[in-house]
Image (cartoon, rainbow over the protein chains, first blue to last red):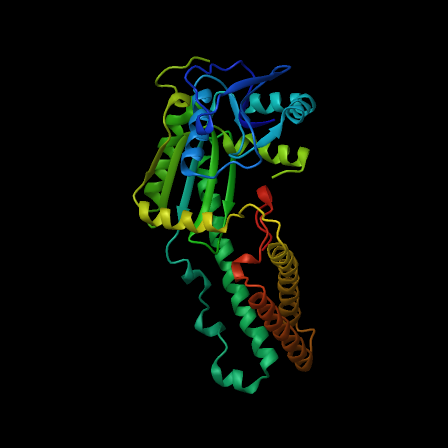
Length: 245
Length: 121
């Protein structure tokens, strides 16, 4: 038999009225100082449905409302001996990670930028004109074209990095940790997750509102508070431990 | 720690944006690029292997291209050497495009998500 995993915590969680994925029972697996909230599971595959994903999130959030948690990513399955082996070998690291996220929530910011194509445009003086291209070979023309493309891409990356610096600078005093992904070639250019102390949440919201007012051409999406999915990082460790994904 | 209705840990997450449709569209694009569960059949294994190999070739091709451009800008190549290098890289790009079509891969397929480190290309 396997277990479907929801989250790890360091205090025995209250599971009153908690129902698992597809109506399964939810139980606590204890190992040393750690408690894992899990459902007994027959089979090897968890159906990826809207209902299951929302139910996983609801259960993690329910436990999170009364305890500090490290959530597992949706779909994590493991055997009972495997789970105990993982908890025994990683107990100290998991307790340390729990202490890092204690009293904190995760907030998320995503940014879409407009007209990013203009950063790739080449000034007329730098462009190779058609008569010049007629005078050179196809190989040279190819390299010149690639050079222009490279300059445009570098400019785009610099603009994206500047945007990230601006956001980082504006929020640095109100967040504890951050994880930022920059995709200069995408319209959704910045995706950031912030670990924020609960007491600093009003400050975080105020500073983010200030930043949004500063750059009206950017489109923002902010969300939260979430359990610290991004900062738990245990799915990565778990995959490495058991060679599963 | 005390838990109360005002406690953010008890609060329902809220999503705030003035551009809902735009974000839904962009997030759908991201979701579409997420790897699906691996089906171990001969065709998908072949395509998965081709994707991995072609991604590495594409990565090296881009490095070679950048290096060639740097050398061209540095002025340490003769016009004939620039032409030869350009033609070689042009043929390499054409060959890679041919292989992508053969294995049913798009430009955006040739990348590897390295987790917290970001994407390879």
